[in-house]
Length: 102
Image 1 (cartoon, rainbow, N blue to C red):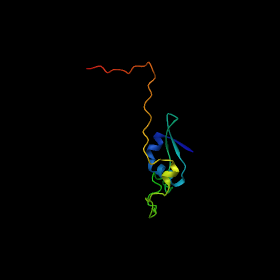
Image 2 (spheres, one colour):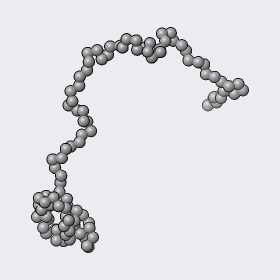
Image 3 (cartoon, helix red, strand yellow):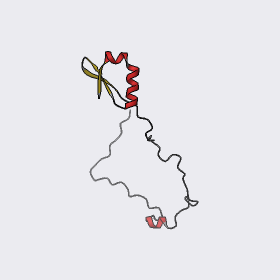
Image 4 (cartoon, rainbow, N blue to C red):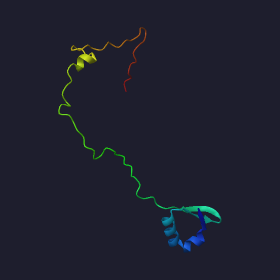
């Protein structure tokens, strides 16, 4: 990896960018002898991931997709008659809270 002072890179920046894009080797820019920035090549032509991988994929829906399944309710154990839910159980000795009038 090549390292240059910012003052030297300032005068040769177009040639420096061309060299990085041609070779693919990054260049570190130094400020007061310490790394301050890095010039790296842009990666192009890679596969682009999309958040919608199934977009433009043909979908086939069966003609009878909304037809009720025979015997489904029997298999699920659902009775024909409606049975009301059990009443709420209130333990003995507890009073219900009364609302205050505003």
